[in-house]
Length: 458
Image 1 (cartoon, helix red, strand yellow):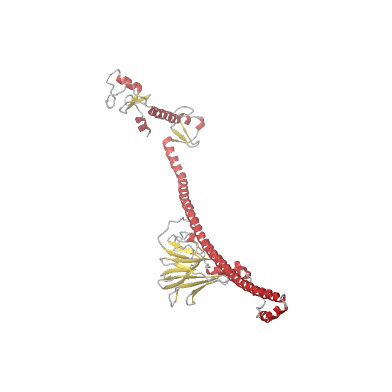
Image 2 (spheres, rainbow, N blue to C red):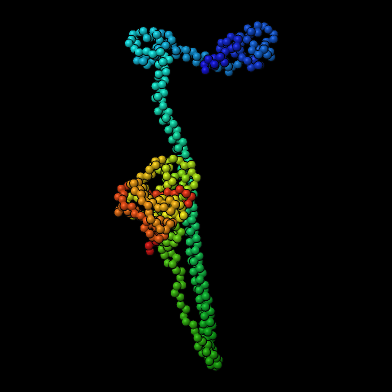
């Protein structure tokens, strides 16, 4: 490499490194002094290489080439000095194995290196390069693993951002649904209040109008009678009979405020928040188990509400430790260590599926730890566990909904047909580790965890 570069930096005339190089119009470069001597007063001033006549008698300097030559000479001189002994200025030809440094022949014969072991420079360099290469290999492998980890971390960071945005959208949608319900409920209650107010206002208006009419009639009767009383005797006697008849007109009962005339505040405000909350039970649902999408095999699609799964084309997902790669499976988000737990799974017409529980599933390991499950394969049902336990189940009707009941305190895991309430199988085992609901499917037919009814205790 160095010899080729030195050749490229050599003058075609003197064959030495360029000294104050100049460049002709034909782009060939020469030492300034070499070119002047070559021309020797020749008026043709031809290029020594291509014989093309130069259009300029004073060619410009090639500053870029000059700087490159100066750098090359400086590095060459430094390299030459490195090959010389700093004590004796002799060429370094040997390598002292005891002092681990290059030496010259004079150093070898000196007292400093008495009884030391030596190797030729080329042999020592080759041996030490091989040794260093061996030491470098673990670092190279470590670097490769770190670079791979960096790629995984970048993918994970990007996936986290997608998850956060998707979850944010779903949260907003859920709250929009709740807000819409509350707004509609508020409007309905305000409308009921306004209707009651209008009805009772009209009732009071009618009663007030009736009272006003009666007051006017009574006032007229009283005024007329008082006027008769003030009349002369003869006139009074003439009108007496009419006055008596006027006073004997049937009178209305004294006006009374009817019961319930006021706004029924208790009906509108009593336990308002609780009543609205009670009505929300028709809006929301409760699933005893939801899926952990971070454990789902890359070919499984978990629904937005985390209650169903189906198989599709493989997704590009980060390789997180919780994810299952060796099985088309996903775990529930919550593990159980005590108590009783139950959940129903709708399998519909899915030809191949498995449900149950598992202690854990290690990534890229072809083995489940502590699993207990019922498997359906084209209508053949099998109960199996990792305790080398497997038995074929006798099932009369095709299962479309299956109930899993886990009693950790008694060590029972039962499976039954939800539609017929028929017992299928029960595992009996002393469970000592945390168990996660386990779901497996190998086709596009979805498995769905069913909600359970809940009640508001009044």
